[in-house]
Image 1 (tube, helix red, strand yellow):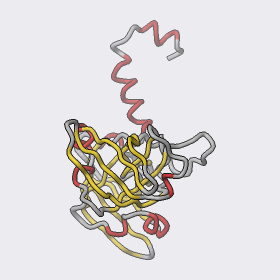
Image 2 (cartoon, rainbow, N blue to C red):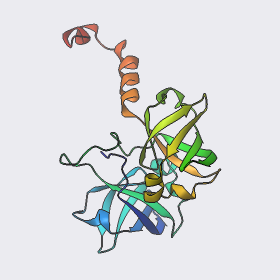
Image 3 (cartoon, helix red, strand yellow):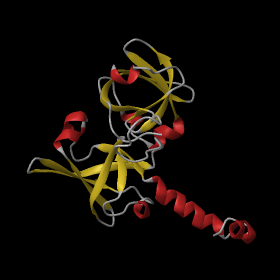
Length: 209
């Protein structure tokens, strides 16, 4: 579990094809502090298990299904990636609860710069329209953001100078892709409603529903 507050911008060293997907190696510093083999690090919002650890880099495997649902397969050596270590119980939750499981890839449609902020409009991936709400939370490339405007097929987020400084979003252009993770609450509510009628009514009565 993550917070969507980026700790560091790492640099992709290599991305190598494997039998199950890709192995990525990322150069970084801060997120390696206290990290051990088997720990989780979010890479552009995708939860990656550390399988190899060196003084200035770590490696992890990206499965085929993750490549299909995220933009990690589009990465090239020297690309910048957002990095965040997994949440601990002692850490402040400055963003929102982010699972590191990508729901889809959004395409940047428009980037507007005005009054010290940047407004980014993205396309909502098909099937995810119902999971976004005005002023609700979402994660883009692992960054916790609030929806400023919401259309039928688009959303707009406002990037403040601090976010631009700490992320690679300052280089966003129309046509770029962003990993999108919807807020967890909507997905749990939908699942409950879909399965409720299929289960024993007495179960829900016992649980007070």
